[in-house]
Image (cartoon, rainbow, N blue to C red; front, side):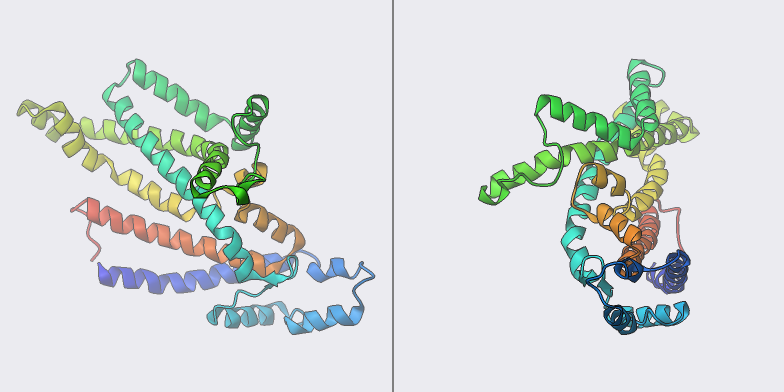
Length: 321
């Protein structure tokens, strides 16, 4: 397993290089750059703009710019954000924790709810519980996330039960530690429900289908014929073999921790990386876009590696030689 992990890490390096090169070229395919908008501002002289372009090598060919960026990346220098007038590392550090908090809470909430309901739906197949949970799943898969967010925000505006957006209340600094945690918890409810809706629906259906396939196997019939309790048959025999597709899904969800909440963050005014990346793309803030894309690529490769490791740990039949 250690040799397999090392091989995967070595393979990931050229993949990240190719991804970064394609992203860098794609950004530069758009006409102009960030400094073109500054040329229209009379407060910035032509000499000042040329100085910054020369300082960050933006006056050189695109491939040369890329190698300068790659050289700085090896020094853990993510570059400078022209739009926010600050280092990229500092900007991302201020927003990364907020996005991770929202994504992890949504991920945990989805799995805690979806897995038990999927098991119940499979065990109660074609009964009321199965039909009811299937209806909820179909609604969750069908409703667009942005529309669901708007519905929840409208409900909050009419009832006043939950905040309308943001991450903290105006009097957050005057609250004690427990009150601050409660305040953040209230603000995170709506974006968590929005992110979890479609993910819960898909995960619940996968759990149901996978468990139904396993329950039809001969060894399950043999276990029941031996007189084993039904709970033991389901949770100790069937569930262990039905969990493999969900582990693979977990790997992809892990890779989407940073990007999956982007639209919801924008609609719910959550101060995360979603709105930050949107502003960076619109302003052609190249180094901020590159840093965000690299973080997403690393999480994608790490998520796939984690899912493969978990598969080998959960299923003794899977070995990576």
